[in-house]
Image (tube, rainbow, N blue to C red):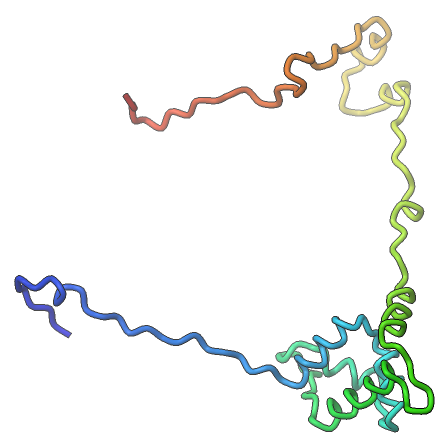
Length: 179
């Protein structure tokens, strides 16, 4: 491509070829993953749903569907597996003609079965060590450790505008004078 000098400025800016963004087609594995997340299903629940339509699959086979595509144990989900899962899901949520169910009740039941995280009960609370234990620390000099009794306490932050000043304003000089 050569540019020529002319009075027409359009020739100076050649048109750049634009590529269309590639669209990724959803695979059966993607559909199965999205349904599992949306319905909050565990692997054992998916196995039970597949057993409703007499389709036997193990948890390890099911786990291979949810792996990353570049993983060595990744397995592509076939049409038959997805079809049986969807048919089983209809029976699981709606029930049969003889024994109908309300799908909202089934989903609420799934939500109630999810164990809640108990972070505050498992973790011990932090308790500050008493001041006496500071004299055994190795980073202090021996002359300062015994004189902690006569020291005045530090003052609290001033309550001028409600917020303490954390950092002073700093003026950076990058070598250029701005006027």
